[in-house]
Length: 168
Image (cartoon, rainbow, N blue to C red):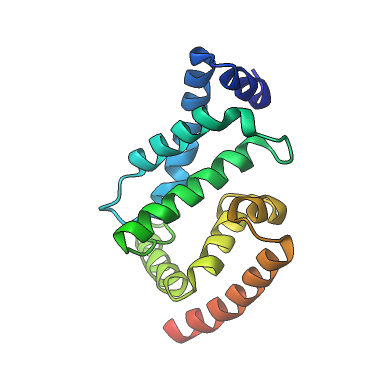
């Protein structure tokens, strides 16, 4: 069943549709959050809080974006709220590479570079380049304009290039 149809059924109180939506989004949200949260932070709790909001507010979906953009935007805001509450910062990037030695080396190098970026710039880069969202989707998720997202990404790339060169 298409995601919009599932969400419409959820808005009508259909628990089976909600279970289907939950099963569809749980692994995606797990990947989305696992790379952004400190190990001490529970992605499961944030996912459950996110999907509870979806359950309660499904009727408020205005069809101005994709369902996934709306849900990931909620997850992003729930995670930020949780992190602010605990005053912890995001853990950044973890991407598998073929050579294990090189994987660790590159992962540490990129993580160090990304960790030096301001939060908004880091999140914009990861959402676009790692998760494949469009600039417009990221703008919706982070509640800012597409121009702001583009600006954040531009400045993040400039800073990251400088940081990574200095770390070599």
